[in-house]
Image 1 (cartoon, one colour):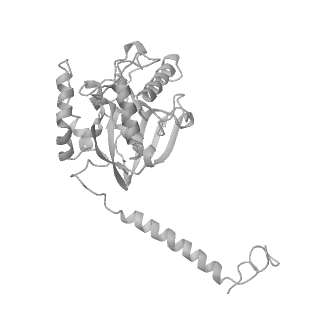
Image 2 (image 1 turned 90 degrees about the horizontal axis):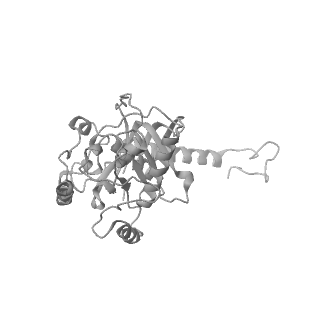
Image 3 (image 1 turned 180 degrees about the horizontal axis):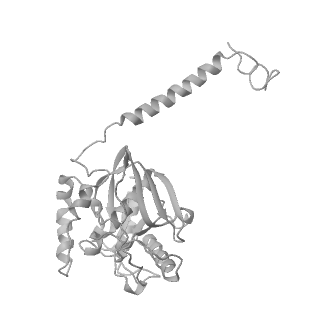
Length: 311
């Protein structure tokens, strides 16, 4: 259940010169859950039900952290995150550790700072979702998506901020992206991500831009989950709810939200041309190898004698 393409992002990060707050000032918020395959969907649903309760409600607490997951329509989920200015502090390292802990306990593959109450450009992820595969853990600070591939794919996404499967639906994402970010130590990293990891990165990046996954739904799919969203709205007791994203940010989404239910991504000519050229190049080398005379690998008879002789 997942999506991907190639365009250049014109979005830049605005640094409002705010310093990272103490962990004591953190509020509470959510994380990203994505079903990886149909085969293990029933097992994942069962384990999530045990963790969250039959109504899909998130756990009220997590081991090793005072932070909890907060749901839509809390306003922090709609804010543009501020850049991190201080790295390598004890407080910052502890924050990253707790976010990773919550992510795993909530059966997630990623967790963004707005989901734990911080309007900060920070998220953590492990696209395998396995704490035993810690070499795939990533702490992403002040990220930018420099390029979105033109090729896209459509898969189902859910989010803990909307009770995971309760508001799951098809989302279009770029198959490949070029990203730039700083690590928890402040080192600059530039990588090209593909496949599921690219999807997870895009989902978490949306969070620090004030975008939720269902903002990318087509009209029909959004209407389909509206009763669940209404229930979350009715359960929110404060008067500062923010229901929709900033209109200007939504207008600049890459790739664009799905136009309609059942939409199938078009075949990208550049991708087809690349595949064709690759096959033709391979065929050309094979033909050249068949028709070349001489002694094969190396001079003076070569390896095995007569290798590559014309027939």
